[in-house]
Amino acid sequence: MDPDPLTLARGVASGDRRALARAITLVESAREDHRPRAEALLAALPATEGALRLGLSGTPGAGKSTLIEAIGMRLVGEGTRVAVLAVDPSSARSGGSILGDRTRMEQLSREPLAFIRPSPAGGQLGGVARRTREAVALCEAAGFDVVIVETVGVGQSETLVADMTDIFALVLAPHGGDDLQGVKRGVMEAADLILVNKADRDAAAATVTQGDYAAALRLMRPRPQDPEGFPCVLTVSALTGAGLPEAWDAIARLWAWRRDTGHLARVRRDQRLRWFEEEFLAQALARLHGDARLTSELRAEVEAGRLSPPEAARRALAS
Image (cartoon, rainbow, N blue to C red; front, side, top):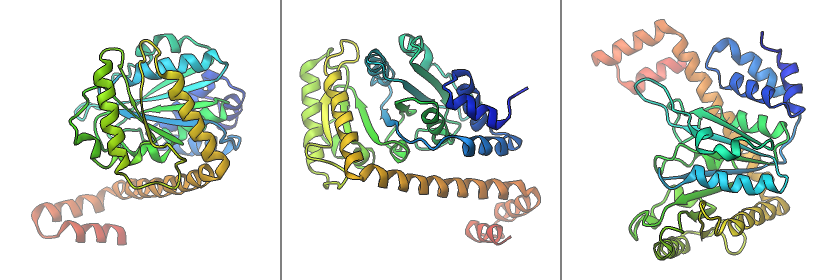
């Protein structure tokens, strides 16, 4: 029998990894009868927001998982507790996911100071799962110093992770695009750092890519949340470790600056409001779909062309 939410919350707060895994499973559950327990669990957590939240996105094959493992191994070697929330793409046809990040991070998964949790995206846009925010809160309550969120990594739409983390890093491989690739908006505007990985394979290509993206960043409008020198582009190699100390130093310096200047507190307040708005919309939509009679009637009217989709939506909300 599953423990009650208060017992589970106490286990999470004490650093019990099994309790943390159970808690994430509970908040990720799609069963309606699990939601009251999940909400009670979240309400019972200690109010802790001291962890550095790092989001990583990038194209498939850029080496995100290998890079996370290399960074994580450095951090746990210094006594830092690291949680990794890795979101895998879900099949649009079957809904299944491979969830292979623990296999790709074999060394880190064996470290007692590390916790790796793969989760399916479940059709959620933005490269993250719907309950990733809850999972971050649980990892913070469990006492982890750094929480890393790895996104699905399928395109430029994956900027939602920037709305739930403190630092957002974009991971690229050398020859990751032409010269115009760097001036595309969206994910570029959200990035705090761009890490050109696999520099050990072709140092010259990595340097060219670094220069292209650095030039593109100079065309971007300055942001108030950035100190001098940010956003920046760095070359790294997850395989050899080259550039990793400099990359982590840049992440830590940016986080400390935002914390000390008050930017971090303001960003997290905004993130909590966006979380509320997204959850409100999701629950309203779920309640609408729960009214099978109304939904089926409106669907039939729209399908037959007797009612426009905007009018049908207005009637559904008015109900």
